[in-house]
Amino acid sequence: MKGRRAAVALGGPLLAAGAVAFAFAQTPARPAASAAPVVTTLTIFAGATEGLWRSRDWGGSWERVQGAQGGAAPSGAVRSIHPLGPRVYVGAERQVLVSDDFGETWTAVSVPGLVLAVLPSRYPQADSTLFVGTTEGLLKSPDAGRSFDRPVLAGIPVSRLEWPGPALVVATGRGVMVSLDGGASFTGSGTGLPEGDVLSIAPSAFFAADPALFAGTVADGVFRSRDGGKTWSPAGLDGQRVGDLVWLGPFLYAATGAGVQRSQDMGHTWVTLADGLEGRPVYRLLFPLAPSSGAEIFAATDQGVWRSADGGLHWQRSGLNGRFVLSLGTFPPPTPALRGKKKG
Image (cartoon, rainbow, N blue to C red; front, top):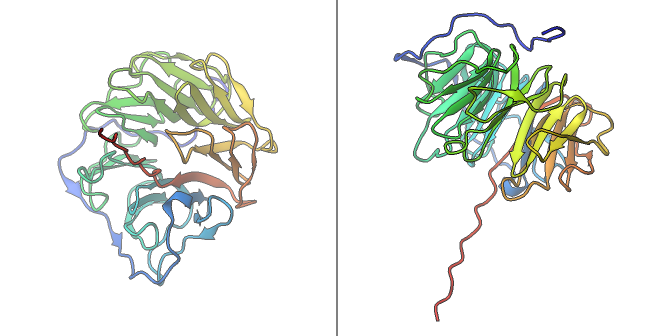
């Protein structure tokens, strides 16, 4: 398609996963120094082009994450953040960094290619699998990032990962690919999706029973699949770069060059939510209270972080002014306590 802008160079054969595991050079973390306590319900992480930043007060103020006593710390461009509490995964340049103390100290593992996405299992207590998308393919670790199997999708950039289970869905430089065997093999991108880079994906919350899926492209807007990626149809925002998609109930949010846009009819129509964004392009979105609430939103832009408290209707600056923010993350919200009914 004319005018297409390639996000990253493509090339290399499509490979199946190898059985031989290999470990990368690791940088151990130093002992932790005394630090302010981490209140997970108030903590927001932001990955910028020059490292990882943390707010301990819901975006009111920010500090650079340095690591303890000169130990390892995220540096360079941080493109992916996945806090679990107390474990935090970060993808920075050509490293995967893991913290087991809420981001105070880190262990760094070097990997081939720039890290674009990290995704652990939804059940980290029982399953230590970690997937890492890079500019050189997809990596799988069976032990929470200590070692990795041979790359799959070798030579194909993998920019986003979703694991609704049992399917693993990946956004790549060659469309959307789906694995039903834990990443050992993948089916190719289905029909109807333009050739080239897919930057974002949003699967149904009940993907196993309802395999609906949205994909955001580098220059052709949003596409929708109702059959798990086998066939695709346009879903609006034609000609736009869609860097992120978030699907909450009836609402589908898109981060675009025109700001934040929202659809509540499966992509048939869209409205722009840009009041207060000052015309900034938006690259990533964070809904820190999801799925229970979509009112609070943080947006990553090339001039810092913006925040909305009303579902995107109005925006205000939330710090890191002048910094190009590539990614956002926060700890999962606390699980509401279940209250039993009183007998009698």
